[in-house]
Length: 76
Image (cartoon, rainbow, N blue to C red):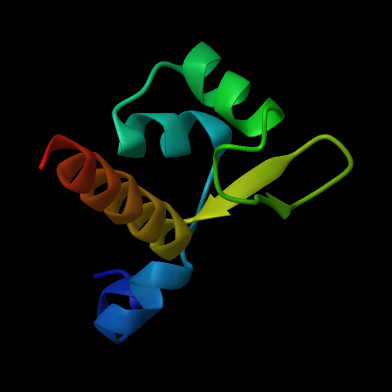
């Protein structure tokens, strides 16, 4: 049993995902995710090192929900 399993569910929003994990989480290819990041469309990453970035799962969830609601309002 992992110690992470004992954490409250709200901590899951603060889990940091790698670039590849963030792209997969959002259902996008890695190259498209990097393009969204470079153009400032993707949520702001967390700097983990000089060349390493990460994204909080909660920020990605909020971003996906905002994009979904934006497309729903445009379709109406």
